[in-house]
Length: 185
Image (cartoon, rainbow, N blue to C red; front, side, top):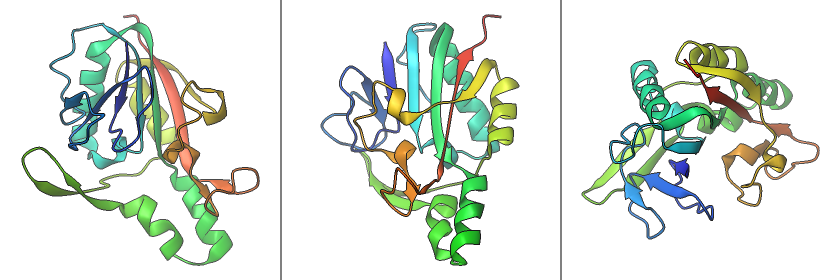
């Protein structure tokens, strides 16, 4: 079983789609930190692109605990989040703070089944901070992943975010793409 968390309008064939938004391709309407409808140790891959940063530090721990619960031993957690180090490079190159405010302080309105709500980024990561968080919450073999080498590479999502926009060959990738394995212990 492969699940796509916080997928919004993106659909990846072969994945179960989980999000609070109410869209036709969503298999389960839920906050992505609540997977109570999924059995323990039943998931082979969790993919979450640019949704983890919507959790504050306490919410992030809850989400990781829940994701760890549903993953099989040795299964993969694949994350993509805005990369603070890359955003600093964009700012240094442009001198324009407006080029980095969205990825740092992202805010959007979403329509759930019951209401409309506004969500916003509550934290940001660099490779060291995200790796530390994962290592200390039940994950190992933490490494960067290349969006070009995944089964979802044909889905243009934020894991492929570059500055300038769509300059995938010579731009600055502003997403930190990290994957890891569930600890066998």
